[in-house]
Image (tube, rainbow, N blue to C red; front, side):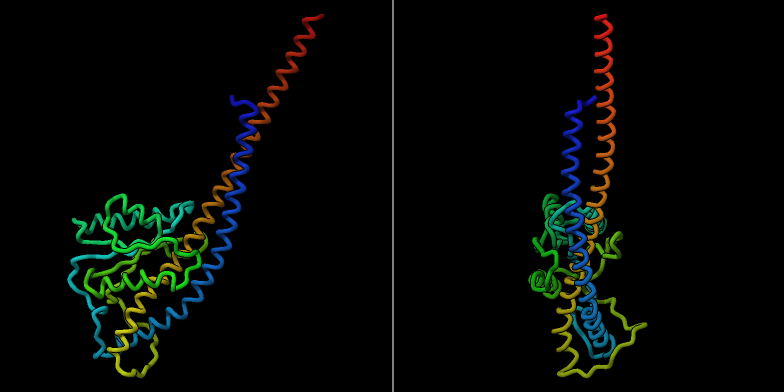
Length: 286
């Protein structure tokens, strides 16, 4: 059995750990609140640009753009959004596992795919396994602005526009609620899944014409999809970390309770032994 000093030391160290995890839980909760606001504030813009692009691409027979057309897939690009830090439960591992399994199922050679890594955890995972990485960014703010990711969004879209890849897929954690984040795979390019079915689209007049507007608007729309996914993923990250830190704090409470019980029992046994020794010594003197 551990000594009273050892048990007391473990109780003290566990209490300090609990203070840290509890503080991290509160920080993540505050960041989550802000991230939720960012997602909600971005949605109206996202919906409006999607409506305009859908109206042009589906409402006119003259509308034509390479980003709207499928082509023979010789190389695939995977945009993978992870965090820069751990301590978020299965947040990173779920996304990475999904991407890695997809790559192994679909491809026979590294020449058939490339990864665009957003986040340090994903980047390090793929580098260790010699997965080709065409672009990467780390250190994205907890509350990112579009300017923070503009370069990688622009370069990623240009991989498709320049013909370096023939399709692009997004992998990230979609935020459903504070306790639920779902790994999501979404085709970024080509934009072949746009449909006006079931939607009420506004009527627009175009100046100079649809084709020139699409040339400007479609790349912006694709970049917007990446930015929206990052905002969504950040909300998921803060929610996952808050949940993980709450679980760690609760586990620390359980450990402290168990150690306190062990300490009291050991202390009671020591006192009982001392009393027995005193009684035995007194009896021997009689």
